[in-house]
Image: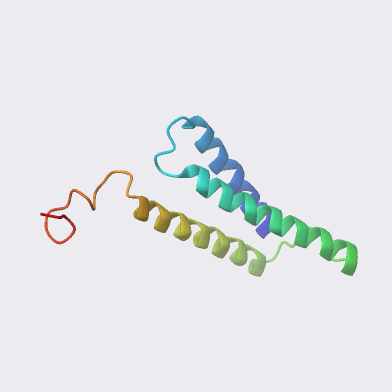
Length: 102
């Protein structure tokens, strides 16, 4: 299930990134790469488990769905931290007070 979930997240994120491709202000390319990296990792894991142990290629269980959801939440958290550090709208730079130099 985690392979299906991360694959869908990668496809959707890539489509949104491609629509807004010239302007990657919100680092959707980074989010797309994170999801594609997870998808490739899960794919290799599923192929090896199927070839070596004879396990099912797709594991459809509540635990697998929960793991897929956890991976998506972790990827979104990493992306959001990268987005906040890059500050594309210059919110922290233009905030008066302790963030702005005199």
